[in-house]
Length: 237
Image (cartoon, rainbow, N blue to C red; front, top):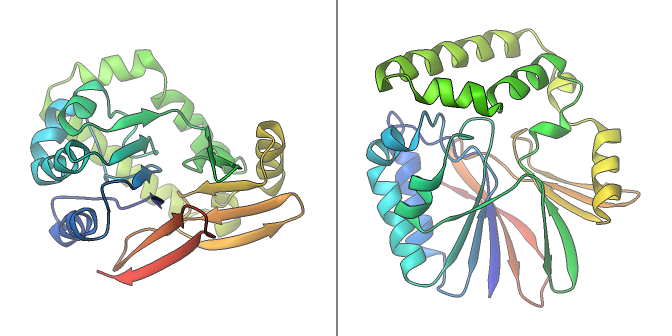
């Protein structure tokens, strides 16, 4: 048995190569007794289950085949796909995890996060995150027509690009003190997250922080076979 961790695929209809890579990954690299953990931003934008399930029908079918075979798949929302909900779970067989989540594997307690809540120096983003995670805002957004939701999502993405262009890399990265507090609060010495697109193993005083990579031209994942050490893997798409 292995546990596999991925994040930040940012699937989009305009990038079918990435969806194909995910399908190949699921069909060729995952065994029945493996567990797959998706730590957010699986999709570039998810404007509701009613639209997403149709838009990404090939990916949905792939996940359904995977879970129907007995493989357990878990999903944690990112900043791009936090509107994934019950219909997605029914269609795929995937189970949703809260952010953060603590799992135990080989007697190792591990903290799983998407990673955006660790970027506390980015005050503008944290304010925006609080807005769109509000159930009232989400209900209003989902009540719009699909066309209006697409338009609104495109507007938010453009705003995000403009804000990102004017921010330093340090502001958009995790805050070291926030990381320490999160790990101490959860009483773990291993943290796995995505979001920053900066794959690396950080050796800390209180443990290790593993950052998963995005799938831009390659795909990154963490493989953790039972009874063995975990390791990061990068392969070309």
